[in-house]
Length: 156
Image 1 (spheres, rainbow, N blue to C red):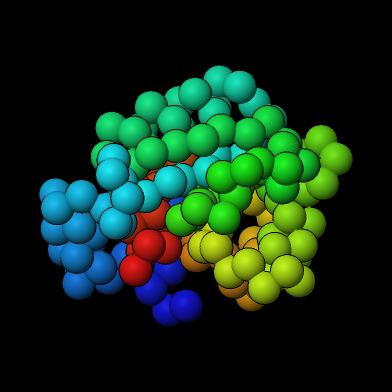
Image 2 (cartoon, helix red, strand yellow):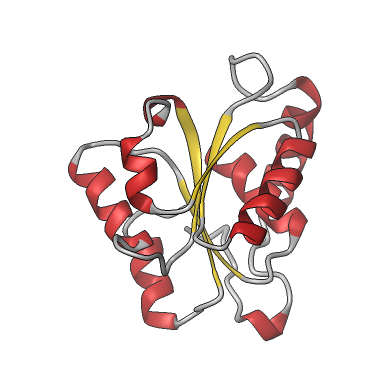
């Protein structure tokens, strides 16, 4: 994935799409995203309630629908799981980790795009997530525009 630039939390933006992706992302947001009323459904899986609410407000402000989950198990049990267009996923969760959920979805041939957002930006873990198909791995605190750009890329 040559369009992804990943930096540590102290180095600023964690994701920079190529200019063509940025222009496409902006135009898709203006037109409305997906074929569903109200935009595509973005699942937010994070054990921190404040983070879930903050990401939910940001993502809704961009015209997407959201559903939040406090654990990977809650996401797996959700009835709306099959209509999820993208998952914003924390790495360290109680019970099943973000990487475990990614592996489970891959084993089920559920290729929903995943954007990892984590306070634990370790090179080996980041590489594993990206090699396993994650669209992006962003360090907390996440840059709002970087997250929205990663979601737009995931929905392409």
